Amino acid sequence: MNDSIYVVKPSLPPLSEYIDEIADMWDTGILTHTGPKHIKLQSELERYLNTKHISLFANGHLALELGLNSLELSGEVITTPFTFGSTTQAILRNGLKPVFCDIRDDDYTIDCDKIESLITDKTCAIVPVHVYGNICDVERLEEIAEKYGLYVIYDAAHAFGETYKGKNIANYGSMSMFSFHATKVFNTVEGGALSFSEDSWVQKFNGLKQFGQIVKTDEVPYVGTNAKMTEMHAAMGLCNLKHIDEYISDREKVVKLYRARLANHKGIKLCPVDENVKYNYAYFPVVFEEQETGVDRDMIQKELEKYNIYVRKYFYPITNDFEIIKQLGYYSETPIAKYISDRVLTLPCYSSLALEDVDKICDVILGLYED
Ligand SMILES: *Cc1c(COP(=O)(O)O)cnc(C)c1O
Image (tube, rainbow, N blue to C red; front, side, top):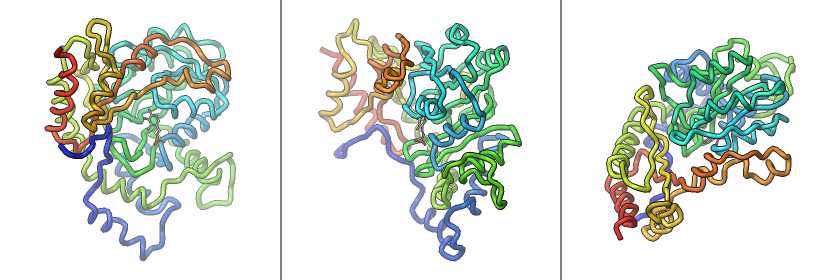
């Protein structure tokens, strides 16, 4: 192992496949504006995710921001602070107040037992996150949403292709956002999507991502922006989608080896495996609990760096610790999220990661516990 190992490495199709896919663009001159590749990717994703509608966007964040925007909400949104900044920023950019709910201490998803006490007459929606590809308690969330008349908009950036009890995760809630960023399980370099079943939203999302205009008409009924996915990006998606099952099964081998090496070890806490979920093995988070062992997260990170292995404190800090959240007066305590965020590292996990390298990473980690 000579090269540095980073926490993620993009999955890329063979270069020749990408060149073949984009070649006709030099004849057609269609580079963007809902061209044929965009349309094809949209329908292939509808098929792959087994969902009624997919709307593509320039990135996952804008998909979430515009998804929330389309619902014309006001007031408070209950969400998790244990996520990437995007989730909280999408809420803020819609002029909504994020109300932070603590997470479960095993899979780090929103704790449904704590949601109801946060609901007020201003609450309009819940934005949970299938964090690390761990699926939220979708059944409880559905019950709560129904009881109080709330929208549920999932940040499913980590959950591409996953199923819960055989049903694709794209089909839960009012809508779900997927990110196709270079580092995600399925990528279009930059890109994202919303999945949903409401037919009338198709036109609305098309308008919101194209300057508020209804495509191929002169009508401008929305306050829109520019969030279109280009043909170059859609072409990358078409190529990567052909290989997605390989990418996921390669990741599965990586994750299974990590689990075999690191499970049942004092001071090393892994997420449980839910038998109802078909995973995409997006991330491998480990919580290092120093209390009994004296080995803490920072020691692990520093030791790995000696071997040119770079891991990430993902997610640290939690989003309710952001300066802007405090300035706006939106801070509230979420002790479990804080505890996990102070101890978690995501280990390198990507489809081309060699199993020998996984062993090496585990050797370095376990070596710290030996003396
Ligand atoms: C990646 C990510 C996003 C944002 O997606 P982009 O495509 O990078 O804009 C949002 N939420 C979570 C949890 C993410 O990991």
